[in-house]
Image 1 (spheres, rainbow, N blue to C red):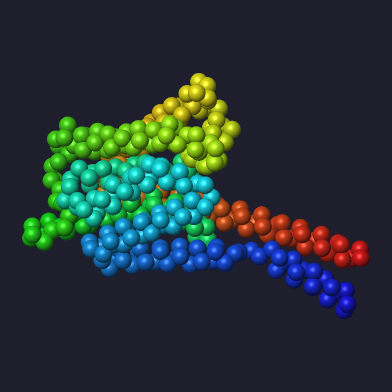
Image 2: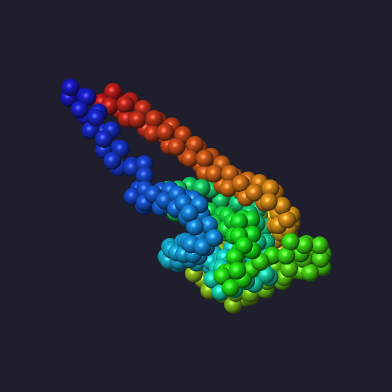
Length: 316
């Protein structure tokens, strides 16, 4: 009995000393589940009104939280990345210029182009107990869902209202027949606004704040990739001096390629729906892979540790 109690005491102390889930992880999990439930509810209950207010409040709140979280870690320069710039334009459209046709198309292209392709590119994962993963998924997926709801539900519903009661713009059913104006709004203007961001980003990260970033060991997306062996080989192919230029060139290429997805989805409800569901499913798949691999490894590690304890006790 004495040996059994000793063994039980050792195991209990081990389990208490290495908890599986911290309090912050539990709170993050609760927040993630509630966010998913509330998003589904408010889209079903108020698809043409309060849902868009929810979009703005949710994204702004999550980004503010991320800013304070990243600030303490020296990661706040990540908030200069394109997704935050794109989300800012989307919120400006939803709150200030909901009848602006150009801003709507910029919103649509960003949400379903680079934001969509960012899911596999950056391996965004729906991991509810990790707040950072939750925020990354939200700022990429919420705009996609909003653009889908806006394009195929709210805007057609606006046509049934008197003009004085309309909050959003109305679309011309034959707008895509005018190829040049259509491509200008769907590609050239979004590209132009993107290039404006790329110029300002390069100026800030590689010129104005370059010395500060190095001295204080701050993290940026460029530094993150330069710390990856495979990425560093690509970026430094023409020497370290030109690595930032290669980085931004690849970023521009990524934007142009991803915009094709949005342009194709704009005129097809089914294609748009398939793309949206594909990106959402992929984020869930990434999360499922994390959970299965994480907990299986954790389980195996704990079994091995318990076996070591058993051996130690049996010897003693």
